[in-house]
Image (cartoon, protein in one colour):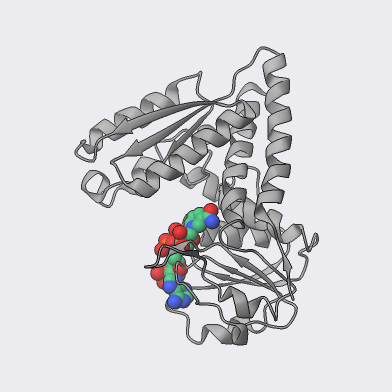
Length: 286
Ligand code: NDP
């Protein structure tokens, strides 16, 4: 049976470090402040933002929520993002995704790039993704950092490991594959157009899946002793939350596996907090 990689325990470790860094900053008279922008009334997004707020408050980061109705204009959003980016009291700015298409159309990238890269705590601006591609220190997307941390909790050295990354989104797949490559893993990126996915996963020492397809990774697709990182979050019709891995059966083949819930989700929020403090320190040069 595989070792369960407990994301809640790992996230608590990261949060503890962040909380002590925030305490040090406060002791020197500083304030770490984070602004989240929420457009529309999507219930899932409201929950995600509330979780971020709670997480910030627990470690002493000041949290501001800026909401716009789904009926707002594109320019209302750009004005708000520009204002928050320019506000010297704010250290981190995040636009909660997805943003209603009626507001952004196909201009989401343009909007994200209005966030000052130094405050881009989601790491999704072209500047930060470019730095990641170049292997230099920018702000790295939170889920990618969570995946790396989870892997390193059971396999500290990724050098030469064969990793299969299923998913190539801007938010998860691409940055994660870049980050793991920067840690000397040999990364193969698979996606919905990949022919015979199992041919790749069967040779992988580590499989990371972020596809949004329940049961996509089955036991037959996994090499004995592989590490399985499940980023997927899917709500089944009966209300149950599952990942992209057939957990019950893959657990019997893998050496370590992340559960859903309680795996990469908590780590993603913990690394958001970490990025906010990193952003503060780079802005203040502390
Ligand atoms: P996207 O829909 O943007 O991307 C999904 C990716 O998976 C795409 O690259 C797609 O390929 C690929 N894909 C879809 N179906 C298959 C398939 N059958 N075989 C192989 N590849 C496939 O999703 P996100 O990256 O935003 O999120 C992925 C999952 O991770 C979701 O379940 C999401 O809820 C979850 N998530 C979890 C987080 C966490 O903190 N745990 C954080 C963010 C997301 P193509 O490019 O060809 O379309």
